View (cartoon, one colour):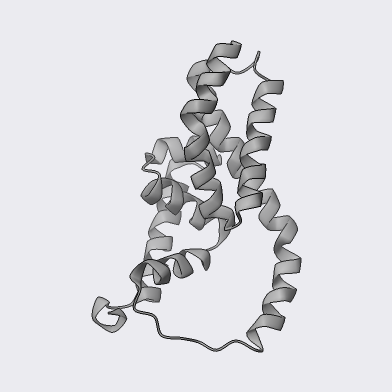
Length: 161
């Protein structure tokens, strides 16, 4: 990959990578770090990565960075959530977007990632399997289970609105 192709990939994919990382991590700083790390790794390996494969390489790298970050922060988040749940009060919301984000955040890491890639970013099952390293049938199963959970979490539209 040439410098020109690298710069073109930054211009083309940076926004989509950031949006994916932000939806996955729910933290702007961590999302920016994940995207920056992906482009840094691409620059280090720019001679080994062909320009045709750069999109898949970048999304795979961001995906793995996000999973590593989530796992690293999991213990701290667990203790914080225990302390916070003792003092929080549940509210009824009528904003479907907010309810959907809350439901997506409750999904397991793998299901959340594939649903975000499929429904938010519009990738095909094959592209998602390349990005995540899962086979295509696993991707379909995770998306199906995630959608079932979201449907049961949100419930009927009449009760939400």
